[in-house]
Amino acid sequence: MRDPLDPLHAALDDVWFDLAELCRLAGVTEPWVRQRLADGLLKPADSPAREVSHFDVHDLRRARRMASLERDFDAVPELASLVIDLEQELARVRARLRRLGG
Image (tube, rainbow, N blue to C red; front, side, top):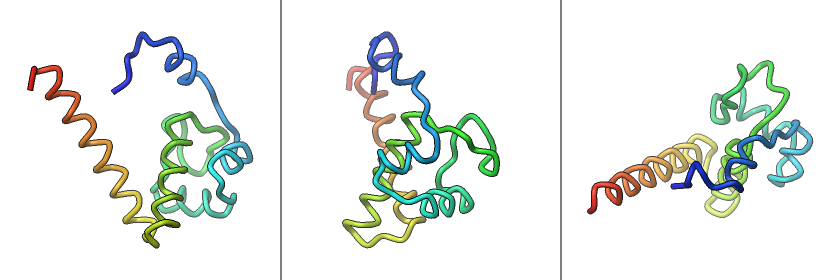
């Protein structure tokens, strides 16, 4: 888990990307992003999927990981999304265990 007082992470939380930038940085196409938005697999936190005009660093990480899983393991988008959700949950559980001293 990240330290919320870490200035780098705080700065990254304020970075926003438009659709073209997200596609370029994640190595995906606009139709790829639009399909995953329509399917609810990418869900930018700031606005409903139909009105997305910008994405944050968390959206970028998710898009990059999803594209990697789809490409490297020939995973369908829904499975790639599920794997990412499970990885995030596992990271939260591990962080909680560390805080509890386990």
